[in-house]
Image (cartoon, rainbow, N blue to C red):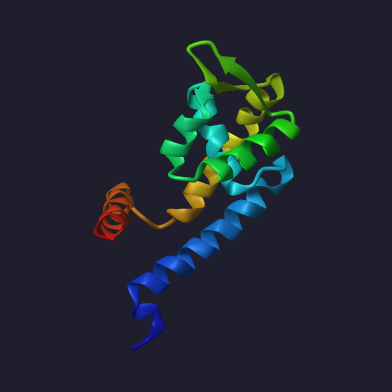
Length: 138
């Protein structure tokens, strides 16, 4: 059997290639691919809790905490105590974090175009559907 015929290896190889490509595209903004996911969530809805990020990204609390600390250190976000829950806090964008969206969203659109080059919209939707099926099967 050719290794490229093994669906798990093919998906893993694609993941490695995509992650490497995304990392290079985000490097000028001092953002790691997973940090970018947090920023995308905040650009859509500022003021989310770390628990919301854990749920949305399916990551452990310690990993999210490290990413939050790193983004805070870069000046892109800040934390505010949650008045409804003293054990929790909300994460907000700084002005610099808000400004970053203008550049990064354009890069994200270019990355999507590169990744889906030669595919119809229907093929992209089908690929998303198939990958979701694989994940749900596991």
